[in-house]
View 1 (cartoon, rainbow, N blue to C red):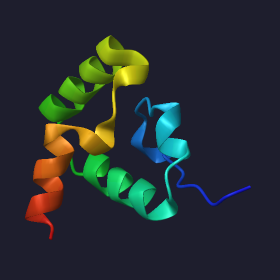
View 2 (cartoon, one colour; view 1 turned 120 degrees about the horizontal axis):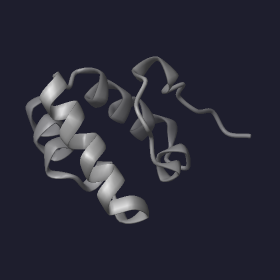
View 3 (cartoon, helix red, strand yellow; view 1 turned 180 degrees about the vertical axis):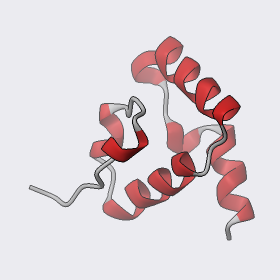
Length: 71
């Protein structure tokens, strides 16, 4: 089995798709989610809930903006 990041400490619903990503992407997503404020956490949860399996955090605008700021 491939290595995976433990997202449990975030106490957030994580799409199953994320668990299939390479470990580097998983770490980026973990870091991004851990830095969200309460308002953005709520927005993430709503988007993930409403979009279901079509939600892709790695392609979301919020993640892209965060990644550009951290590069």
